[in-house]
Image 1: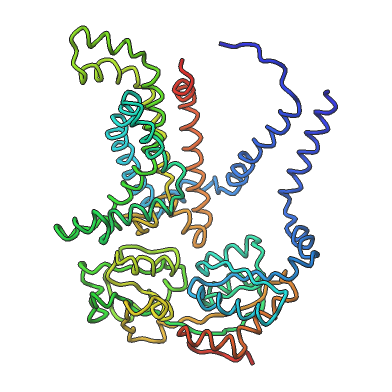
Image 2: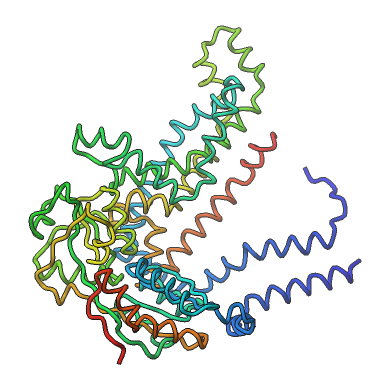
Length: 266
Length: 258
């Protein structure tokens, strides 16, 4: 619905556009360095293919696990007792603002061979999570799931409680109410959250390096490949960067209406 | 109203454009005119020099009141790349000739001031018997990535000793490799003898059989855009005091700079 905006202040517009340039110019500068003519061959080099494979597998798994665990968590945060959820919410969201290396260190102290939980697992099974693809996935879930929870909780909150109560009075048990009423209504938010969590997991660098290391074909993801390639093969670093920028912009573009709905209602 | 708008957009445009023009020379010369920054020497140095150079920097500042040394430690290959992209370094101390050479356009003269060698470090609590243990898949080990000096030396020394096993990770610099060992997440790490020494008595090391392949030379030089005081720091590294710190840290081949 187009509505008439009040006159926009020219000063604010000018400052706003300066803000826009801060975001826009670096991206333009980056894209200007990309060797477009042999982009395909840059992206199909063995090291690029390896990194693309590792990144795709781990980020998709991280996004799916985020949905599996994050939707119920978001549901609890939206419908659970406020006395508890008001304390839980900041904890759940905290990875969003945590420096990634700190996140990596946190994961290492939990799941490393000497970690709180990892030590026990290592002693029982001889298996340790660091330096495995599982570590990359866990890092992705840790940093990505908060996005999903944030969006999905907002959507759950917009569903009128009366709708759920009505279903319950008509004899539906709580889990049936969730699956037949709440979840379908929140589907748009879940999809947005899934894609955001995926994109965040795809871009993770610091936590992955600290916790999972960087071995080609196993734990070296696209962002780490960019970092390494900057010294060895800058053209390939620019090519991979271009791909990641295009993915980022596409994701946000496709989700814009969904996200506005999630945080605005309607 | 419209005029103000135009004037402001113009000003913003000018400010933005001038800020992104490649006028880094203008920026630094402006900055270096102030006495404050003229007396600050920015040193880019290899990760493996972190402890020694921090100490040398302290002693240098104590001997030269008014001068200040600021360090940026990292993988030599990364630092060279940053210098080539216009990072404001006055001095570059690299862990290999190769990384120094890649910044040769901005650092035409450099001199070797020390040598170091990579070794196979392990926790004393869970010792390695021989280098060949690295071929055992149950032994987890890490090294620097191939383009980083500590990785180049590791590759050469490992090949010479016939190691065909693979590391669990190729880390971006030697600090990161050492961190994985001190966190006990790996059983061995290819790091510098100096890193083993500084990580305390909980860690020991096996020497590679081919010492020449395991050894790397550390050149140091000032950049073309360096402040006049920068050479004083380089001279201090070559001085008796500098050599003493480096020697205590376990560096070898300490040249007098003659």
